[in-house]
Image (cartoon, rainbow over all chains, first blue to last red; front, side, top):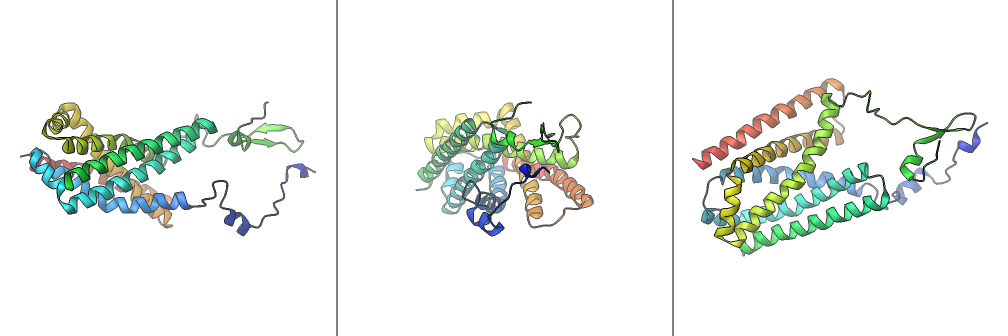
Length: 131
Length: 148
């Protein structure tokens, strides 16, 4: 008999689900990636078409476009959700490919810091033009 | 064989019925598995295009900060984006954006539980690839009209 290989789990499936795994977040990260991707669909459609239409336009035209309340609002949303989506996507890539826990955690924190830094920088640039 | 301390490697270690330790084979086996089927190829491409956009966002930040900093900084950014390298970067980013968007919709469809049978997987895969080409050309059509 090889019963030393059989691990007996006393926790019920519901208990394990309530415990939400080692990260204590359950499917939250996975779900937020889907929510942000859905939000980015119309935003990217708008953004790519808008930027393509801005090709060859002057500095004054561009400032006018960014500064328009409608465009500035959508730009801020694109920046916020875009960087959130990027941070969570890169986190999954790092979790999959970096085996060592210390370097994995360090890389993820660096990615999150960079996304926060550049996200705020981009948002501030939009606000400076729009406000 | 050595038993690993790493938690991930530990899941790769099993035991034979006589109790001796054995390292389980990794899946997919990289020397046997064809990485460039439309299924696996598009899956890894979705990750790569997502990671490329992480770098692409830096160009968006540069463009916005340059616009906020004044005409000189904006002229420098415009000079780069209208240069050969800059155009190549923008063209690549537009293709990558459309691919990641369309492949993302395909993933959302799977998440909702649709399209798992192999003929549908192959069909949606081809739709994403063709759609990426069409939308990228369309994007640059708009850009060229705006430029002219």
